[in-house]
Length: 143
Image 1 (tube, rainbow, N blue to C red):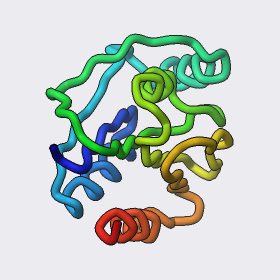
Image 2: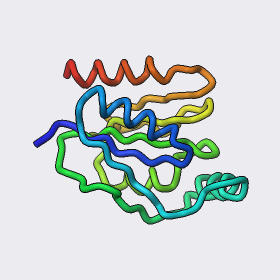
Image 3: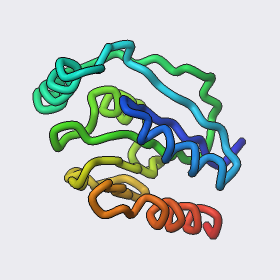
Image 4: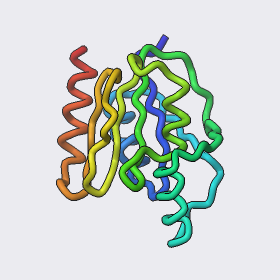
């Protein structure tokens, strides 16, 4: 059994870039999920915020086969201060004590941090992407 899988959800490809960096550094499978909803443009942006604030449920689809692993590194965005709906759906499929959560945002940190193995906030305003990824990768490789 492999130790890790990186699973990500993205709207603007920021979370994809982060997930790819992590996956490449620890040499593990990379799996994208989708919710098959068009979030593009201003209407999509407003709808995304609304869905996040209202905790709207969305169905997700894995774009690759998910193998059994010991721990999951789940990467995705905050929308309007909350986790993207697809990310919420994904996180409900795994026990928190098997998840390293990596959240991307413009400048806000995720509030609900309880029960996860680790939680990492990558914020565009602080420019901390590479340092957060290095810290996570080093902790995983030395574990």
